[in-house]
Image (cartoon, rainbow, N blue to C red):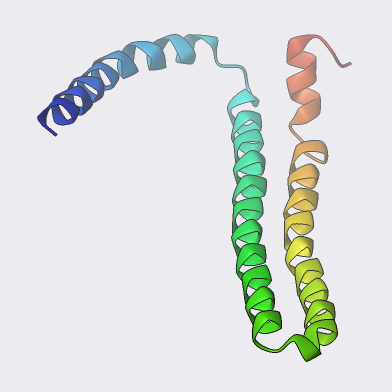
Amino acid sequence: MRKWLILGLVSLAVLFFTNPVLAQEAANKMVTGFGFFSAIVLAAGLGVGFAALGCGIGMGHGIRGACEGVARNPEVAGRITVTMILGLALIESLTIYALVIALILLYANPVIPKFLTTLGLGG
């Protein structure tokens, strides 16, 4: 336990002292709009990731409940399966909505033309 505490404190100290140096270097190289674009990329990735994580957990709970229901009462397996598939489709639609929002943020962004012109890729 003590070893992990020392390792964590040393890691925090290194991050604390190197952060101003890296921030100063990044401030000198900052391109207008690039910070905003990178924040959108990060938000889109995290949004889709968290949506997939939540939907995966929800699907697991739904399938577990359906399996338990079929094990308790095998005569209603058909109705439970239909209800489970409908529920899984609705859960999966939430991940698809998050993906659509992420794609809108990435490709319908007003900063992208400015960002591409600073890179020399757009005109």
